[in-house]
Length: 159
Image 1 (cartoon, rainbow, N blue to C red):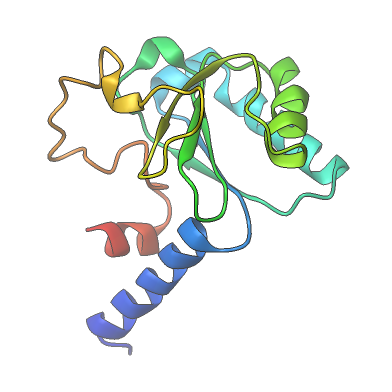
Image 2: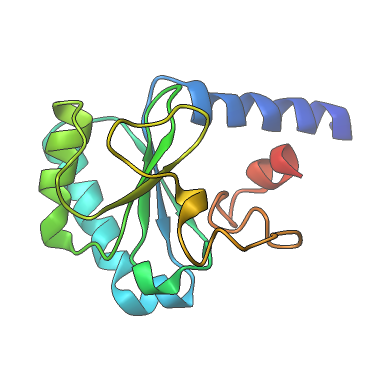
């Protein structure tokens, strides 16, 4: 049986591949608010569009960031960049977002909410300045909306 340190090393390596690897990482909020707003239909549309365009990306279901009014909330982390968030997505929005952001490498003109990360994205506001997030001090739920609750390695890596 592996030791905790071996498991932690594996978890950290997997996290590094997610955050700085070669594939985009797409997170979709699927807590009750996201589920009720149509997150699973958006996931289906994302999978279909990525397959159609032969784009190899990771899609994870994550919890709520605490801005339920913006659900379905989707963010895309391109390799070694910042997360770009899209709000109130519908399946019909997905092709434009994939085309613009992942194919053409430009920020879409629709439904952009903000970015989160160390590298600002031109023309996009910081998510930490948004009402509903700017006053949060997340302790117990600091990883909600950031990690996939069904991936123990993400839990272990991020504590």
